[in-house]
Amino acid sequence: MTRLLHLDASPRPGRSGTHEHGSLSRRLTHHFVERWKAARPETLVMRRDLGAQPPSLLTVEWIEAAFTPEEAQTQTTRQALAESDRLVDELIAADVLVLGIPLYNYSYPAAFKAWIDQIVRLGRTVYFDPTDPEHSVGPLLNDRPRHAVILSSRGGHGFSAGGAMAHMNHLEPSVRTALELIGIEHFHEIAIEYQEEGGERLQQSTHNALSQVDMLVTGLQGMGEPAPHSETTPSVA
Image 1 (cartoon, rainbow, N blue to C red):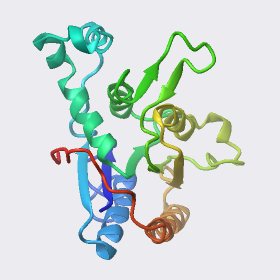
Image 2: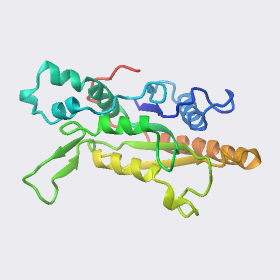
Image 3: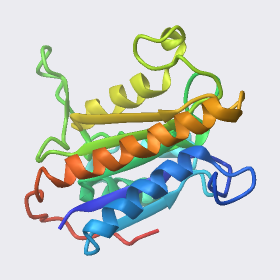
């Protein structure tokens, strides 16, 4: 059974098209999940609202605990990593990451960066081998194919590859860099543009993005079921 991890990073609580001043990225993620579930209702969806409940920022206690060997862990260090462990467990269990991330100041919101910092974990999602100078850092989540679907919204336009503003878009490249580090290899990107302009061009961009989501869901589902999971299913937030 496929497992989706649905994350929304927008601080806007509602969805455009449904709620006044609602989030465009939330509209895309919910549309993706609804279309997926319509075809495969048995799919498990783990949802975490990063915009409403941002992950904690890293602290010196977190850093010390993360670099403490397993055999030296104490109740205090384990507690410092408890939130990170929950987020990592969700990530490990997922086959498809559905990431709703608006473009803020040419990158992603702080809440999403906090999630990245919590899930890039030595010994859990990445390894470090100081004895191997050629491959000292490597991924631990390359045990099976995982897909990351990056669903974004942008105030301006021309931020996609080949666009006039592409060189200023640090959202998708940064997400890919962090997730590739831990072993996620398959990426899909869809965005709505013209939010600041509004009007017909925003409507057309939204229509195009929703249509792309439909095609992507069909394509991913056509790839078949993933290999059976051996991990314990994390609690759904």
